[in-house]
Image (cartoon, rainbow, N blue to C red):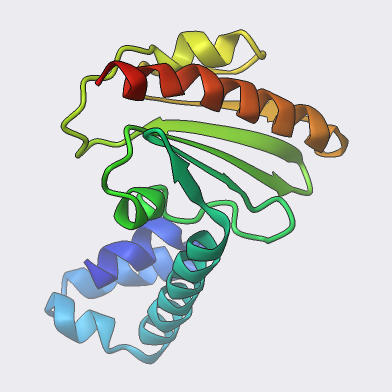
Length: 167
């Protein structure tokens, strides 16, 4: 899992090619102990722990819907399952983030929720210019349209709360 984290998260193509080469020569635990690979994992893991703490402070769950706004933090790309870890009783999650290239609304459904989902998140997000799949979707806005992203997120969260009320 640690090596998978490095492979999925790094943007360093040389490191990826090095890992592929090492896979032909060494065991997975030995590869992870290579200094550059270990350092990369350690940094990713610290970022992950930091993301959990930020979500713990920023996320709320009401009527089955998690909401968070991390638009002032550089956490785009955080583990999308953290909110469900923090709020296992949730059905849906709606988050706002921001990067230099966009303001983003992420909409997802808790894959471990015992409650039935009745909303198609792609169709809901399409109403705001986004899209995706029935269980996960997103909407991108221009970076300077953060307030529009926040408005869309609030409206979507309110719509999704209808599932909790039915449960």
